[in-house]
Image 1 (cartoon, rainbow, N blue to C red):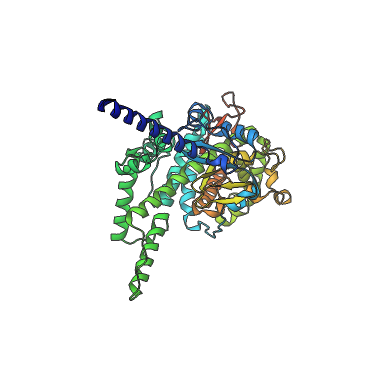
Image 2 (cartoon, rainbow, N blue to C red):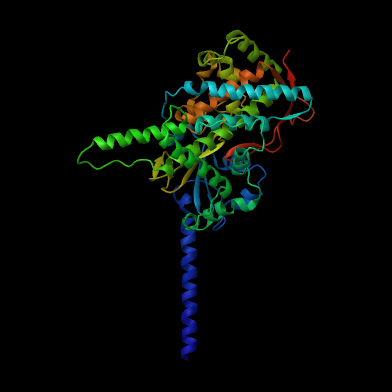
Length: 469
């Protein structure tokens, strides 16, 4: 055998060995869930269920439902290389989800929210006079934009009457990708190890760069201005800056001790941005579905209006009066159950943990499909019937708190989510005092929904708006 043939054979053998090693590594990776006893479909190498997801017209909604029917309340799959475990078993969820209670009341922001809600109600009056079907998400989105801008950053914008406001132009692309290529970095990061690191190195953003740059510049400018000119504002940005100042003062008093890590300007800006993004879509989504259900159920509308007249009347709306609207609470809770804004959220498994017959390996992602839990007949009687009375004092005690997850881990765990509830209730009071929502021929019944993290209707929610008699 000559030297050339020997080299070729050696290279061929090396290639075969490398291929076998690659096959072994891939097989080991894509059988971890199986070895840990998590039932689920046999994954396609490297991609898992990504192909099914891209083909799905309902996002994860039908995918999760099929996995639940076939494999039970705990099932697993691969999204690219990422291990995912779906959990709808309440006993396991009690361990996975961490509860944290807050006493934040949002009183100082009440007047700003009321101002934005008054503008919203006036705009609905104008639409009532036009007599045309109204795409309610547009109006609610603009209202939420104004409200969250003042509560997060302390700035007043008027996107409700100026739809081309830069805030609107830069927020919409974050939630609604214009094309499939916007999702490409996310898909590549799920399939190929190390891509997420490369995305950071080359500054390739999953969110549109133009939108991120806009909010980054705006936040930096506001932070610098606040530091130069101290303010008495109580928005979320100022709360973060106050916390930084308190830490600075505390560190200066410490002698001979290692200083604690303080928030950087970039971190403060990022937290305010996340607060803004989380608050925008959740409140707009809640109000959109609330208007839809009021159009379908005039009897619920009448109960709400009667309560508002009795508790508020013609007097000024206050935080205390808002808290007395008990049927309003029931209606909002049922809307959140029926249409949870964060229909699907997750938690990362940092250490391998065992729950009964299931072992969750470290590095896996536990997915919680709140929509599926909220519509599970084991947890809710007649789950596909919209019934605010299920949250009445007489019946609410029968609901297991861990099965009510409209904002991920529940509104009491997050200042932003509690603010969203107050914001939505103020808006509903102001609107229902002036107009009512009515079903029309353009109203799609029932709504077809898809889950892309958020719960999104396939078709616009269109209703008619009439002046309140």
